[in-house]
Amino acid sequence: MFQKLKKSWTKKSHDPRGSIFVEYLLLLTIVGIGVIVGLASVRVALVNELIDLANAINAINT
Image 1 (cartoon, rainbow, N blue to C red):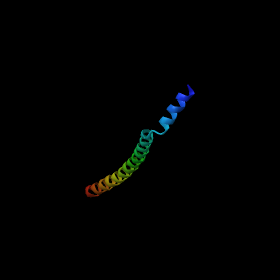
Image 2: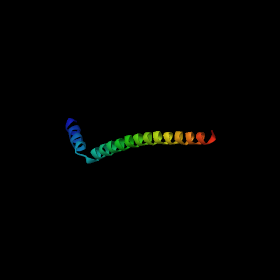
Image 3: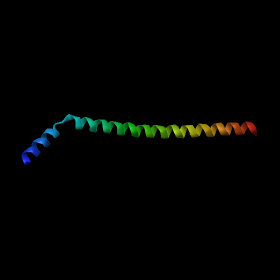
Image 4: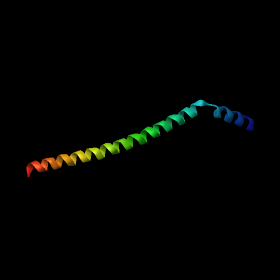
């Protein structure tokens, strides 16, 4: 029984599909973090532009 388990374990440890999955998972994690940071920067820039626009419109009305 232990011989079967050992053969199965060594066969799975040399399977490249698991390592490829982990690499893709790490890549997606890095890309996901980059997207979140990028969207946060876009949000800050958009809010600043809208504040400038509101101030310009307010200056026209006064």
